[in-house]
Image (cartoon, rainbow, N blue to C red):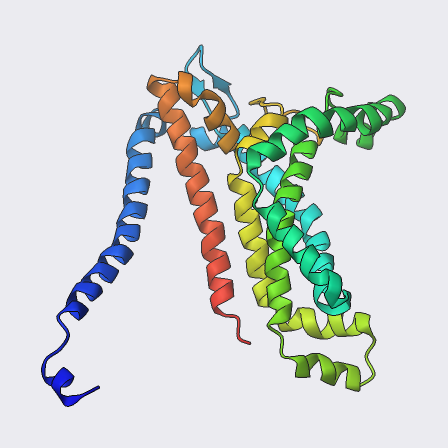
Amino acid sequence: MSLQTARHPDPVDPIFRGLAFAAATTLLLTLGGLIIALFIGGWPAISKFGFGFLTSSSWNPVTEVYGAAGPIVGTLITAVLSLTIALPIAVCVSVFLTQYCPKAIAQPISTAIELLAGIPSIVYGMWGLFVFAPWFARTIQLPILTNLDPESFWGKLLAGVPNGANIFTASIVLAIMILPYMSAVFRELFRSIPPQVREAAFGLGCTSFEVVGSVLIPYVKKGMIGVVMLGFGRALGETMAVTFIIGNSHRFPDSLFASGSTLASTIANEFNEASGVHLASLIALGLVLFLITFTVLAIARALLSSQRY
């Protein structure tokens, strides 16, 4: 910096600093305004039903009785199931790409994963409704229901109408949607590990499986937990794909093959025709979804900030 510049500061600097401050605070104000708008819009339902709004599974627009328990449980079950399916596959894909895959095909596979992450959710939903659900009902659900005793444990766990539109198929579609995102982030985590760590493990005589399981994964385990939480948050808020295939029933789900609903699918299905307490109940569902997702992402952020490489 020259002496002339030091004596006469650039007049653009205060303007740039003000624009940066305005951009940052605008996001914070937008977040605060969103929470206030959801609370005000959902207040008629919150004040009418109280805490029972969260514990009741009744959802009847005719009698004006609304409860969020069914959609809340449906949201948590589909998110947990999809994460259970996607997590081991995403870890295997990322380990293969970073440790075993020849460089000649690693980049094409990585590009394909990134393209899968960019496909709109409505495309996944249409594929699930018109292709996957009929196939699942015909080749998996119907044979299982035919051969199981309805009174047995498995018969009750897998009971449901064999049409392919249920919580389990919605979870599989959700798993396919979050899998590319989780694989891509896991891959970057493994790439961030210094090569000396892996080479030292091999130098001590470890096998490839031992290097991955005992050295590489523990090295980035906190970051991996953060990725898992981010994938969980993505699954919680997914709307269109789930709306297509979950069956959209407000009752409490009592089996894996039962139809159900999520917070997002309920809002998407009924918002256009709602008014009065019905509309307020849907906005309250949005507030509940926001708080659940915000909590999950806050936990993920805390875990990621504690990661040290």
